[in-house]
Image (cartoon, rainbow, N blue to C red; front, side, top):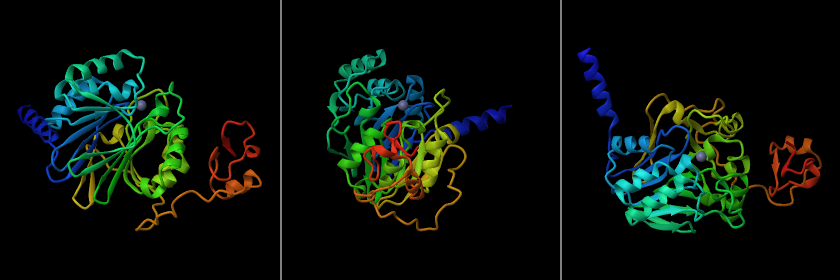
Length: 337
Ligand SMILES: [Zn+2]
């Protein structure tokens, strides 16, 4: 029994680790159903983008990864599975800034977080198109595009593009198709992708990631941050999209915390707490061909759904080239479903 305790103890200690200096470390934290991403620059400056749904769990993780300070915390949006863990993070480290979408949630959790932010002297920073410098790492804020209804938190998710050398990571909260379509109008595909490590939108929900968006993002590795839930996350449709994109798939419910370390210049490695990422069965030959960026030119016309299906682009979403109401019998913005 004694040796067993010793073994467990050493395992526990091995699990506790500070981010290495000299490399960028991004941890997709295992917070169950929710999102929390811890980003530490080679200089040791740290940002927490979302905090998951549990204060207790976040305290454990901040201890496990020996976080000593936070420059900034960010809420992709105001839902509890993203902001609850920000409360202890703010209380413990009094970060300078709290990046958010500027739309108050109507929950007690939001009120509690704001109380902590005020008590800590943390300044609110409403998302706008700006670059935040985290040591030698560039964080580009993707604010919600114009025209998103202010009553909808998901559609006002704040995205973050992380760049270090040639490396890119992208996370966009629980955004939905209308928001990603807005971003596609605002940013060229060459700016968005290809993304080395991509956080699946909305825990793999059906209304998050979509073919047009992923065609621009071109993810090489996808991390789904997910735990036991009643929503059916991640959906088979989302997993199929990642597979079609040729991405290797990681899931925090199966792999635990997924840690990315990036060397100066951009070479990177992914590590999991358990298991490995799953490659798509039909992985394209290496190097993966980069699709000829943005969506086809406007003016594409499909005489009928059979033609659209043959082109492999169904369902056609409103705003996508080739979409027209004549193909969208039920008028829900998805033609040739
Ligand atoms: Zn969520």
